[in-house]
Length: 138
Figure 1 (cartoon, rainbow, N blue to C red):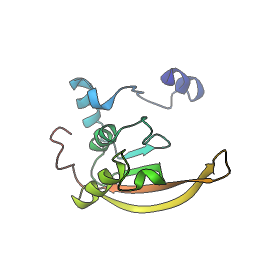
Figure 2 (cartoon, helix red, strand yellow; figure 1 turned 180 degrees about the vertical axis):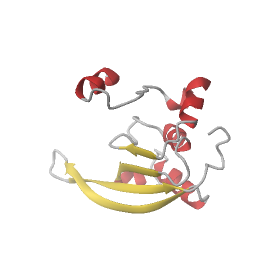
Figure 3 (cartoon, rainbow, N blue to C red; figure 1 turned 45 degrees about the vertical axis):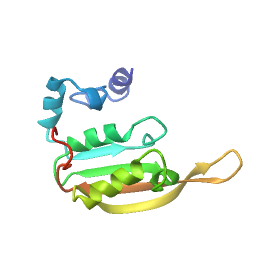
């Protein structure tokens, strides 16, 4: 459905439009992405909450060339080191192992809850510095 909508709304914009689970890609698709020379990854409103797990983020990160930029936003509470999602630990690990550096980040009010309380998110832009040391595939 997404590919059809993208072609309908923006004809010819994408040379390829892949809809797949990056954690279970067939070898042919892995090679195609690895050889595509990707230098940017943008993920908005999808980290945590069961949408994109840390494993999928790491798989996508693996296809980005060294020096490439990664832009994403995440609910502030998911950045807390004790949160079950694992995103805070994953980001900390990528930085400490030298795979990624944060270029800039900004906390902002995403919206108000039904009770009127602010729901805070953080937008981050990072640079990939190296392959993930624990990832022997990509």
